[in-house]
Structure formats: C-alpha cells, structure tokens
Image (cartoon, rainbow, N blue to C red):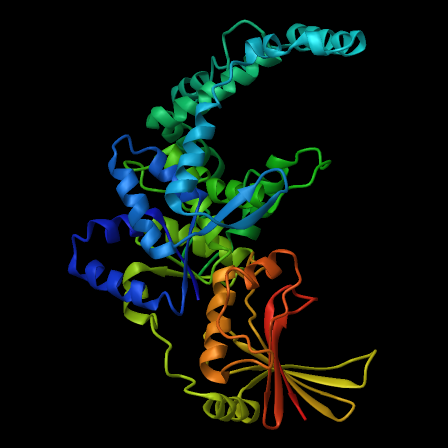
Length: 474
C-alpha cells in the first residue's frame, strides 16, 4: 500500500508522547518492507512556518519513515511527479527558492539589462511598460454606504476601495499584500468566510460523512450552479483556458470551507492552514490511504474524493491503528503456494467483468482476488486467446496516480525473487544501479521465469505504464 500521513501525524510520531504512537512507529518501520510511506511539498510548507531549529530534527525523523518518496506538483509540466528526494534536501531547496521570491513589481523593468537587447526589443519593452503603468483600475464603483458593517469592514481590507486608481503593477502588489494579510491576521479570512457562509449558504448546504448531495443542491442557492460548476467558473470565468487538476482540487477544498459547506471551527481556522490542508488532500489522492486526526480535514477529503470518484481510503489515525495490516509476509510461502492460491482465486474470486475482444480471438474475465499478490496486485485478468491460457496480475485503483514508484517496483521484484528464485537470466533482487537506470529510460528488461507448466513475465505494461505479472500456461 502507498500511505500518506498528514503533517500532524508525523508530529505525533516524532514527539512520541502517547504509547499508542510509540507502538505505531515500531510497526511502521517494520512494515516498510511491504508498504510505501510518502511525503509531499505540503509537509515542507507546514514546516516552513516553524521558526525554530526543531523542524530540521523532525525532517530527519520523517526520513526514517518515508525514505525519499517525494510528491511535488510541477507547475511547468502541470502534473504531479514522484521524486527520489530526502525531506531535509527537499526542504533546503524550498528555503533557497524562497530567498529569491522577494519581488517588487513596481520596479521589475529596472532589472532588465538593456545593453543585450536590440532597438526593436527595447521599443517593445518600453511600450509594454507604458501600457501597464497608464492602464488604471478603480474599485471606487463599489458602494458600501448601505452595506452591513460586517461586509464593508472586511471588503475594505481585501479590495483597494477608497484608494486612488491603481495600475496593473500596484494592483498585483495589493493582492499579494492581501494574501499575506490573510495569513498574518486570521480575522480577515474569518470575516470573508462569515460573509460567504451567511449570504451565499447560510448553513443550508453542508457535508456529512454519508451525504455529499451538496454538489447538485447548490443549484438551489443564490449561486444557481452546482458546486463543481462554481469552482470551474471561478478558475475559468471566460471558458477559454484549461483548468488543471491541481488548481481545481485545491480551489474546491478551499471553497468547501469558504462557503461554509464544510468549515473549520471559527476559533481555530487559519487561512494558511486551510490552503495547506487542501494540498495534503490533493497529494493524498496519489496514494492508497490518507491518514489524519483532524476531523475537518477528514470530512472535506472524504467529500471531495467521493465527489470526484477517487477511491483512496481516508482514515482517522485510530481507525488506521486498529484495522491496518502492517505485515503481509507469509501469505505466499513459495511458488507452489503462490500457484495454489492463484488457482483457488481463478475458481472462486469475484467476477468484475467479462469482455470479448473485437480485434482478437480473445475472452477476458476480470477477477477481484481474496488478497493482494506479491503485496501489490489486486486484480486478475484470466484470458484465453487462440486456445492459449494467460493469467495477468495487476493493480487497479481509481485515483490520481498513473505510475508506480521505484520503491514499489523494488518491493515487487524482491518478493518475486523470494518466491520464484533467480530468473531465467540469472537476475535476483532489484538493483538500483541496473533496474532503476533501465526504468528511467523506459527500457526495463523486467524478470522472466520458466516454472513447470508456466512461464512468468514481470514487466511494465505498455498500455498502462504500470507493472504487471503475466503467467502463460505452456
């Protein structure tokens, strides 16, 4: 399983103030031979707020659990990628990048070296500079004389009302300052949330664990649109750009709180915390299990996952401790035992689907087995093509992940070696020098065994780009 703890769980394990967390840590460290524990950019953002040196000790501690399994969104490629990066190294990279983010928009053109530009380029820059400086935005059209004080006082803090018209540079700087203000003064975000909750929702649309009809019910509100349409229209009001999964999910999470559909308690709510919790929820959708002890986070995450058809399990830490199977050793003792379990599932497993190929003389039966083979595969395709029997083992879960981690492949390869021994080419356990290099260039040779009535091929499926095990009956 690929497991994601939010920041608070790592902190509990780090402090070890409760016996339950001390015991849990022991189980986690032992279970790393079977499971993958991940961290993300959201954890680094949380720790960035810690002004003490303790955060560096906590980062070293987190590494004991997650190794170097790091998830981060790439804003250039517009996708979430998996990196082999230790927490302390990733955090130092974040700190170094933060040092270079102090931007003064008003003098941004002053940094340009005109000596390396030709006359045409200089003319274009001067024209752009003139347009941006002369184009003015005036928010004084917003009349607040007859508006309740709770609305006017909040809007004056957020929007440049009662100020001179601003050019684009000044307006951008204002919004950057407003974002910083909401981070530093929790009353500003509370005021904004209270307005939207009272005048747009008024407690009518809320999230319960077993009821997420708020999506369609929002049509009956003053918004006159579903929750999903509301989020999309905020991100893409003109309908002329692509809304990324990252932007949509985080905006949706934030909107659940802002609109009062699933809001944090007023006393404890903080703007930055809501944003970071949304990031944790987003990165958790790339894993099999998300664990937290924050009921507000759990409720919003469960609601969004169900709304977006994400099958990742969302567990409270107590539920995780009491129900999760940390060790899976001994389920398959050797090849004969593996084969016996497999043949039993071929006869008795739940049939999910049966399909006949249009192109080939092939019938495929999709089965849900009783356990995960090699600690990973939770689906079996039984195929008969031209009187030859094929059995294909793979993993199927509907979430945001479309790739396997290197360390997941390592676990599978090593489990195969434990059960099947040396492969046909004399290869054994996963080699970080050979296997990882081949995986990086999409030329992994995988593993091949010739065992009695069957041949077995472990490789990356070209169609799904995920690892699978093919058994062919001779």
